Length: 175
Image (tube, rainbow, N blue to C red):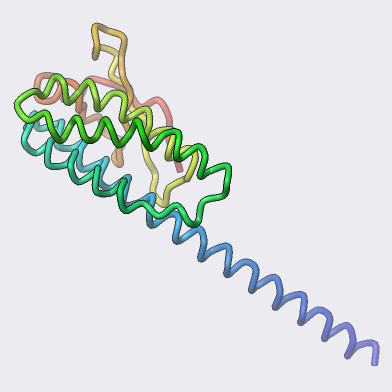
């Protein structure tokens, strides 16, 4: 009889743990999907900057504005929601400026500098499914420097483009 009771108790605890973990995995997957869309549009933007094409940069900036508009905040905790809302307004505005500034890649890069800081904060807040590298260009902005996120470890500098494509270093790895 004791064995039967212990078996039932263990089975119920096991099922409860599996059900709880399944819900957690589902919420994480939903959150990561929304984050992945934002991150994918950011990386497309970063890669467009490396080619010095203001038109491709503007198109990617507009795509990022759309990604921000479609971001689903339902799976965020109240703390995450507040932090996301604080970052969202500035980041979206930078993406809008990038999209509207065809013909002025210098201005686009100024906004990309600030957008990159916002995206770094978002990734730290919400996480990601992929390994990212936080790269740093020491020469950008009169040697004040700037960061960007990259999906590859090799340096492909979005701030100096074709002029100095490998200028920079990896400062941090995000997983």
